Image (cartoon, rainbow, N blue to C red; front, top):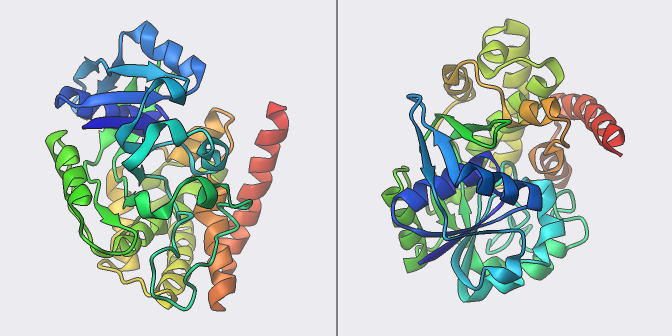
Length: 329
């Protein structure tokens, strides 16, 4: 099996490093500056939660998808807002049997594909505004994956794995196929906890409850997950946002194995970790607002649900994001 990882940020590096160390044939595709940083470091450098550092050397690290050849599994590990731009360049990596594994936070562009549902075929304009993802990535080759590990990409190019090992996977249409079992095995062999779910969308929503609420509040306040979940006023805002999102999700047929309070407590237990969105703000990078928040607001309109708390926090975070983008020009 040849494994490709498009996007060698914190999560992509963590995945590539672990799969390499398990003996997998890994190709990484990223921007020239990240490719150069990996070469200068002698490979993918990861520090585990206990503080042990190790290096893994991929089979190929390139900024040119055409140089990588056809791969069996391609993890799309970029930020969600980068995917539409990249979609057209993925063709050289994808053969007839190749599988794309999406690990982005938030609601994916393929959410309504493969569903026997009143909204079947609806395109999420917030995450695929021009239909580029729908056009260039056939949903039949997609497997959903929810990434629970928390990791930080450091200034020296290494990655600190903070906590978490779960990568549940599932087919878009809810079926169980050999490729999904093989994917779960690859992740398991790499030291992660992975299982095949029949309802990957409910798991996506469970992760999204925290990302759509805690992430933007952290970006606005510069507070850690533990700070937000222990300070009573922000904890209340998080609970309201999660409850609104849960109502929207349930209107779309999702189910939850944890209450809102349990979800908040799970986030609090992570401790003083900076969310990925706060890391983006500190590094003056655009935030993943479309997949995490605009998509949920779009679904609120679609299902006729209110989302006042989500809408308010999104407005504040969107202004901050606009300022970051303007400053980078």
